[in-house]
Length: 80
Image (cartoon, rainbow, N blue to C red; front, top):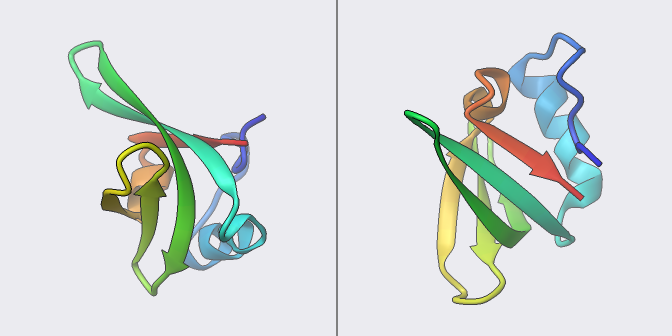
């Protein structure tokens, strides 16, 4: 199930509010890299900041950051 539905119009504040209930929970993140390439991560959202949020990959414990704008531009999709 998609955490943030694509149908709604969002701004950075509302996206952050939508992600708050999923803080410290396992999610699946699909990143669109362009030219029909994508990566999928099993991760946990660990921290929410003003413009970015941090995830920790479950397998390798690597921390990655993404912008809320990545969700608006559909560069990433977050699933439960």
